[in-house]
Structure formats: structure tokens, C-alpha cells
Image (tube, rainbow, N blue to C red):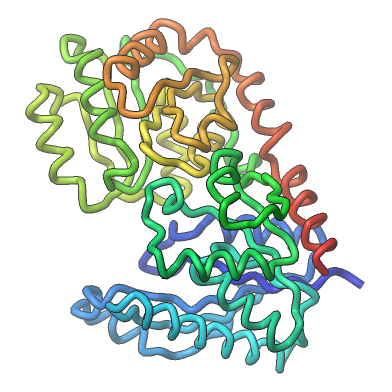
Length: 388
């Protein structure tokens, strides 16, 4: 009889935000393909700012939906976020526990719960452990620990969640070190995210400089923590006098207007393209057209886009922001200090000269050996089985 796992993610893809929590979805579907009986329960929290958009407001009115997505049962509450943090947490936890009980009434209680994020999924899992004695594994992904965003009242809650967890996992070594003060000596296993390496594969035709152009790609939500301002400054320092160098930035967010103004102010407006939010297929297509990938994050617990890029055969330049240090070495690219515009510019110049010297098979094997579905899914299953 297969292991029965119920996943409680802190985010999950939805119609208006198809990339939200996509790595939770991919890991869950990977567990199913590995033979685990797995389902997802998720109380979606939308910003009340979206309530002014009639289509979204009409489609989401606190109702529950039950769907099968790529073979995985998903139970959702189409909810709205409350502005007060503690009230939002309490309502989300209570609602999630109710959804779990609804799922259990129909499909039986799981052997183990896999909670992604102490806040708030871990709190719901802890409640179910106390009430129903369902053990849980907590996997932490949040950059809040590295950015000093954990509030004093949340610290006690996180410690309590980690104390009750039957297994603790961090997606990177740097994050694991940040979690140690909360774990009170409990073992924290480091298990990375994985990607679909069949989908993220090299292009059919080898990359080349198109009419002498060198194209750098970066992907991320446009917020300060992603360091897109540092990337634009570094790109301008390296290539403002070289119009054959181009920078594509995929993703959207509150910083977009300021970043567009920065590119204009640095004289590289015509070299920098803002592509907006892209679908999964569009992400892969932009990677196929690029010559190198750049990630200038200030804090990064892992860096899924790095392994996606490497799997397609793109060499990378990244910052020592935590997660990238577990991924990037001299065989696949280079690492520079966080916020160091000069060092990043120098690394981009070197990459322009040397990108074609990186062996595509070496880049891809770097991912297959450490971050492929089969390798990572089995490690997750081992932790879940021990907890169960």
C-alpha cells in the first residue's frame, strides 16, 4: 500500500497567478509519479486590491472547489486576505484545517502531512498533529529568514512548529543555518527543489551569437530582493558602449517602472527589454534564445530559475545570496558578492567572451545529477516515510 501524503503549500498556482508556488506543484506531481498517493489542500489568499476587478471578484467568493490536476486531487478555498497579519493567519489556519477535515471525510486521513512553510502551513499541520496525531514534515523555503522579516510574535510560533515536526527540511544550506536557532538542535535536512528536466532541455539547434549579438536573460518577480537594479547597473557598466549586448528581463512586479527609468538613465534603454510575466513555455523559449543567464538576487533560498537555465545549457552569473552557492561552481558559471555592481559587470564581460566555451552536456549533467525529479523526489519520500 502506497504512502498517503497530504500537501499543505503556502502558495499554489491559480488562474490569475499561474506561476505562484509552481515548484510546490511540480514537487507534488513528482511524488505522484514516484508512486505516492498525494493530494493538496490550499486556502488561496488574494489581495483585496483585486476585488475591484469584476472577473476575479465574481469567480472567487469563498467557495470550495475540488479538482484533479495532472492526477493530483486539489481542494481549494477561493478566499481573500485580511489586512491584519495575525487575523489573516488565524483565519487561514482555521480554514485550512477545515479543508483537511473535508478531504479526510472523503478520502481518509493521510499517513503524513507535508507542510511547505512554517507560516502558515506549518501552523495548520501542528494543529492537526495535536488534534488528530497526524505527523508532519516541514519544508521551509522563505527568504523572510534571510531578510530579517520574521516578527517577534512569529518567532515563538515558528519554534513551536519546528518542535512538533517529525521532519525538518530546508531547500538550501544557507537557509538551514538560518533555521537552526528555531530548531533547538533538531536535524535539518537540506533537500533542493527539482525541475522537469525533460521540459527544460537544450534547444534543438545549438545557440550562437545572432548577427554578433550577446543576449543575457534574467527572470524574477520585480521586487528589491531580486536585485534587478544591480543587474541593470552592472549591464550598463559592462555594455553601455556595446549595442550588440542585450538584456532581457522576464517577470513583472512593483519595481518595473523604476527599473525602466533606471535603464533609461544609464543609457541602455534600447538594449534592455522588459518581457513581463511569461508562461512556462515562454520561459523556456527565452532561455533557448539567450546566451547566458544572470541572477543578481540580494537573498535567495534556492534559485529554481538557475537550474532551469542550466538544464537548457545556459551558463550563469549569480550572486552569493544563499541558494545559488549550492548550485553554481566554476564548471557552470560564476558567483559574485551581493550588491557588487563592479564585480557583476566584470563577470558579465568575461561571460561575453567565454559563454560558448561552456559544454552544454556538462551544464545539463550538473542538474541531472543533483536536481532531477528522480533524485530529489526519492529523498523527499524517504523523509516522509520516516515521519509516517
